[in-house]
Length: 366
Image (cartoon, rainbow, N blue to C red):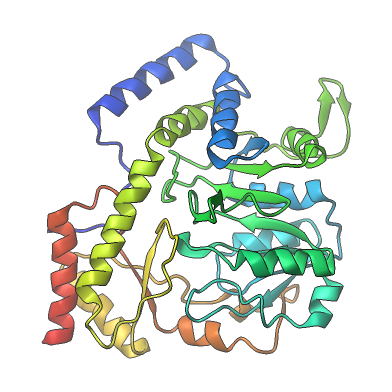
């Protein structure tokens, strides 16, 4: 039996037939860029997340980049973010000329450690990008207190946490902007690159609408130099279809995560993270040490079970001279050597899930 880490195929015949009809209608219409499908998706997305505005863009990376620019972050401004996330987060900061400042994470949640950010850094910074990692969420109460106390702009990086709720509101709706990725492996995944920004600010929304389309005011006039970052009509069609059943897919992820926890929790060398309110874009566990993790990976590979390490090399380990970092990164330096992500997706059926669980148990019990 083979168990993949992700499942990105469309297997449902009903969905396939519906998508084919929509794609055929698009081909017949000839309206391939910024047409009605994008408008419908933006409307559906804002309604689902209960945000005033949603702007489709071409990737999660551009969602971060355009958010920073639309909020008024300038070259030279310091932007605080987590040292334990994907490169795109700091890439977006750097590419607009700002300076990423990396801080440690909480060992029990993997989220950015807001409690230990030094006051002198908070005073110096203009913005913060909290990354809602692996389907979890940062401490929203602390985040909003920091925003108010230090007058910081907030771009929530929600690439891995679509649908995650905090006190009946969705991650991505607490800051000035919420930046989403719809890369195929995400909980709400497209069939290519796609992203979106949500905001409650009319000013930011109007800037985003222009920024994604070269800064256009109209065909011949421009407010500023922008980007070519329009959400594709094809992706909008697919995302609209997937959004219809996203709550069902999230519930399946939560069920799978619950079974992992129930059936592996007695293994002393495995630790779980605080999974409250998670949508489980990934399912991370913590092994005893680096060697044990390597041995477990090799054992599962021999059984055709895929796993992944996120992130083997923390952003704070990169040698770019434009990266600024805190002196204390104790937790991320520990976690990076022990973390391992297991397969999790709605199509992971009971027999495959049992196969993964039984082989992990076999590894530890042999």
